[in-house]
Length: 273
Image (cartoon, rainbow, N blue to C red):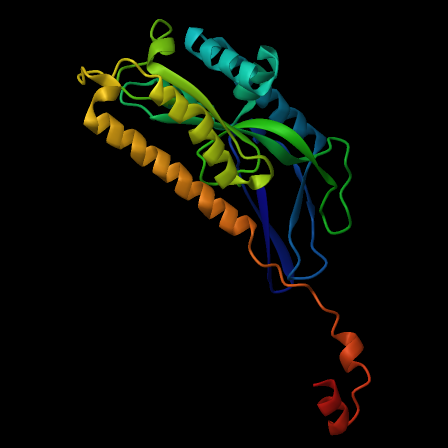
């Protein structure tokens, strides 16, 4: 619930808007800002927090009941790739506010990709107290979460699931229709992660590929050879670009105060110059 305050004729009036039916009838303790430009802080009462926690628990159990063989396949792949237990991955998934993306991925003509980031995220301690300005002490902590890939900075590991057909994903076809991969971007070095992924995983897999569908000649086919050459060339260009960026010139910072603190007259400026 959000409380908005406005002054009319010296009176302070309050308007409240509901945030879902889960908190209907609960109360809020408003904390008025010290000045008109300060941020407004809303503190939920103990009753409101309990009600929200209760609703969150109900939602988690409803999602847990939906888990079937398809979800188990995703969970097992994530657990193996990220070195978490399957129970930890399951709890993370059913607690994620983007859980519906998994169902959209399984649906006929659904999403073509499903992304998970595993990286440091600022977490607020459950027992942290508010500072005078309303902020709290946040600590970085590893977290696995579902993402669209366009709203959060990518600084850790990306685990992805891809599908190439429009068929509905079922428990019987999930292992054939869904492909799993991981992309490491530790410390935000995306180019290096992409270069490693292509050169050490994708290209070796392509060059060892025996079945190329309608192309009977396989690797002997001229179009296949041109394709592999283009991929090799792209990786080489990517590597050169990365090295150029890493080898960029870093100008040394100079403390100019020692040069200007004693400048008093034009002759001092000439000497300094």
